[in-house]
Image (cartoon, rainbow, N blue to C red; front, side, top):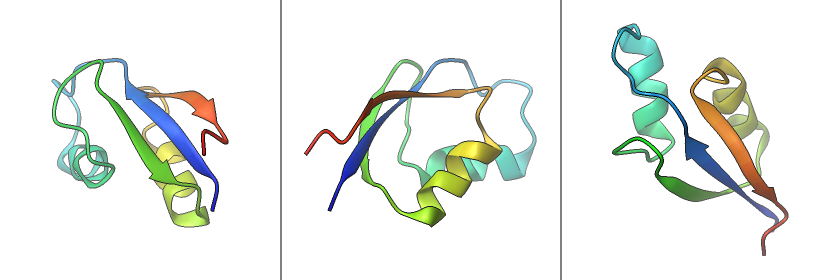
Length: 62
């Protein structure tokens, strides 16, 4: 399975609870953290919902 690397680029201060839950669901705990997730439509949808805060670092890492 292909994987994608994501980075949380901005603070979650000022976001609404649904956006915070999505960011937590992606596995982020702090700003500038990089997480690796399996590339599925569900993960892509979550990234699209919080795109101002999350950056795609690397696609197809594995």
